[in-house]
Image 1 (cartoon, rainbow, N blue to C red):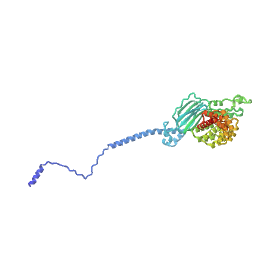
Image 2: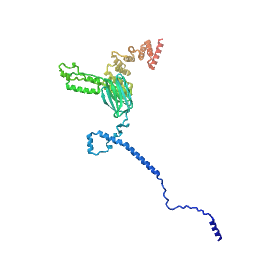
Image 3: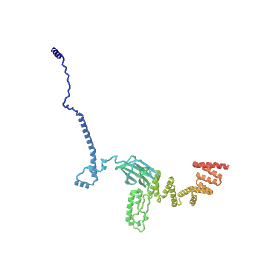
Image 4: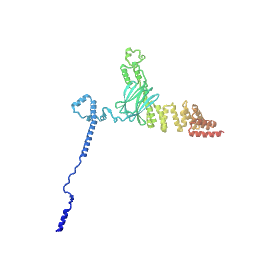
Length: 478
């Protein structure tokens, strides 16, 4: 008992120290509180961006809607507009506007509409003509916009210029040149000198589109017809037709010529004064050369040859055969075939040319040279012997043909005739020396070889031959 009492007294004297004990509750935990400020800021930023985008779209679409309405109403006649307004409800402007109107705003052409450009200008001038070539990125459409006395305005559609027109002074062909932007394109304005004919052409040169202006001297051919052979009405109609033609294609001087009254000497004595005053003498004036087309085609063929488009040049030259440029076309074809080593075509064309132009020295010489290469030496002699006067090349061909036939006396004679016309031809001196050597004229042969060597125009092979024969002849003669 006493022990229990002591324990109780000891407990009462100790300090009270409370230590809590955590116990997990079985109830649901309270919901955590979330911070709504970041979410509100995000929503506000999205609303601001949406408002700014809506305002931007309104500003961009407002001008585009107004412009189609104005263009559509401008393209429709007034009566049609009234009928449309009275019979049908108005449709939205965007439904009637054409697709291309969307790229036009307030009458300003955007960069997307114009992709073609003038990127260069070349001027070629000679005594016969002047040529201005405008180099383009792509092909284009050009037409005559304005025509005055010695003045022209050509419009190049849907194109812009990257160059500045040069200032031309004291030019016999053209007085002034200007390149200006107008009507979604470019105007080429120029003033020519009197009596100048203007021609334009679009072509491809070295793979680049080129629009060219050709200036040539006009060719007029007046033909006066008797007044008594024309009725008054026919003459008036002819004069009207000639006036309209000269307005577009003839220079001012030619137009003045067409308006000149007939001389008094053309009227017959029986014609009364009233009939003479009422009748009009018809003047047939050709402002352009009727052969100009063929001449341009021949010029274009030469351009094709220079640009190494030989097949196209050949086809164009073949089309010119039989026309007004037949002779020149044959000349250029022979050179073309010789350069391309088309022996069969060369022989056929040269035979046809000799048959067509039997007295022409050029074709006869080329035909003789063709026969010589085929070893038809007797035919060469027969062909050229019928000519009254042979030139240097023909004499040399006859001499070489006699030499190949071992008829050296005739060869020496024709070589000397050739050298009388051209003593500076080293090859003919070599040919003469060979025939002289075969004829045992050794001293004369050595002299011919030495003359050929001194001219210095032989190729390496012939020069070596001349040196060797000269050394041999010196040894024999000494």
